[in-house]
Each structure stands twice: as structure tokens, then as C-alpha cells.
Image 1 (cartoon, rainbow, N blue to C red):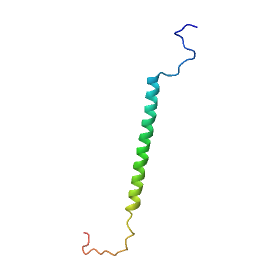
Image 2: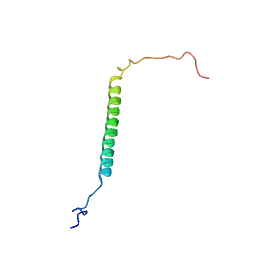
Image 3: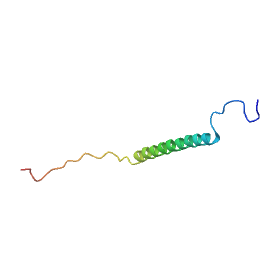
Image 4: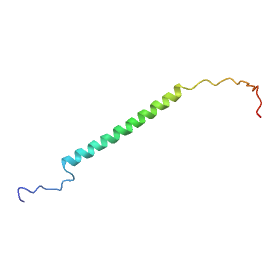
Length: 65
């Protein structure tokens, strides 16, 4: 076997692997941010619930024509 031939076939070069790993990390970060924002919206809606209003009667003193 010649000295410049390496056994086996490389799947991807180091640059390609780094690009794929960084893309996966970016996807994880984006999904994490989306989940965090959805959780904050959920908590906001839970905290902002108003107690039910008491029923009231409203009378209109002007009649429509």
C-alpha cells in the first residue's frame, strides 16, 4: 500500500463535521428559546387571570330611533 493512501473512507472532513455540529447546536438553542417563550406566555396568562366579575344590571336611558 502506498504511503499517501489511508485505509478506510472518511465520511466527512473536519470542516463539514464542525458545520453540522454547530447547526445542531443552533437548532437546539432555537427550540429552547421557543419553549422558554411559550412557558413565559403560559405563566403570564396564569398570573393575569382576573377574578370573575359580579353580574350587574345596566339600564339605557336613551331609546334607539
